[in-house]
Length: 412
Image (tube, rainbow, N blue to C red; front, top):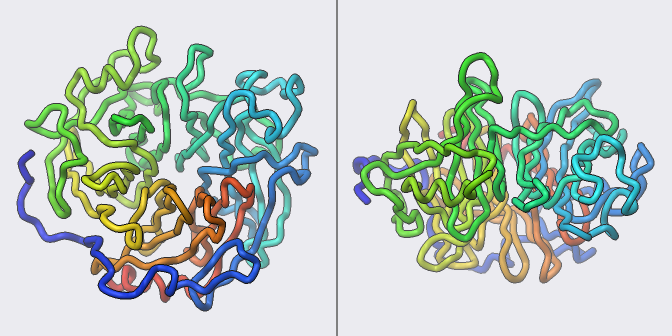
């Protein structure tokens, strides 16, 4: 793969020269979430509590995003990654699905949590989307939250669903069929162009985009990213700082009637991503994670700057040591431009930030040895981090000197 010029790095993940990760964070006496000095957390909601609409808070909270709400409120749209048959953690009993459910036999869902922006007190919570499966990650769009099904089965699952943020009760499921039917992980729509960028959680996956045509933002072409001049290139072999020009290849059968979208993409020479997971759009830059990419299978973080029918892809982080980066999953960006990832690997997982000069820093650690952090996102002001402790079924808010932490990005 040829580099697209020897341009300087915007930032580069470097190995910590001394000290341990554990020493950076203050142990939580409650044994739940270790944080940097000066930071505190608040548990907003826990699984199986009753929501305002009478449904139970589902288990396995995963992808999440925060939106500004009315009257000084914040709206958290939250996925619940429930598998087929996982009814013990569902918001309702089997056979009691609301009529709006996509499938009455599927327990996956999306919930809405409204909190006061100043006090973080819960204002209300309710079920929004029902009858889906393995709602893993998602992302932002002009139409609200996008919830992604991380499954593509014969029963017709595998879609991205649009979920309005003002839905105070369950709404009819709205699959965005043009975004394809495959093992979706994350999705994010550029509000300026209505182009959607999508990741796929497969061992050998592709990065996709949906390009609308005409005046309908949901009618258009699904495409997979390829490396210009290097069909079927594996991104796992990229070096830190390497930049490659990309192109896009068409997917003819987005609903996978004859062949899977994954097979179609690779037949056209799409670039291979080793388990594509988190994705976040910040301005004109798309950040996305390869959870098991790289020579150590510990993960990679990419930066894509799209331009017309092409663009430039750069590898900006590579997992070489668990004290630095370990299986990055969800990703988000502070309003200043600072990048934060949630890990999903063996042992305790971290929220980690990446500084402009390449210094990694720790923000939080799930103190449970097998705990997974997910759903990391900021409020619009950048003063609060929200996250889920997935297996514990908790949604938390983290506050502290956030702008000091990300001040280097604001000055960069």
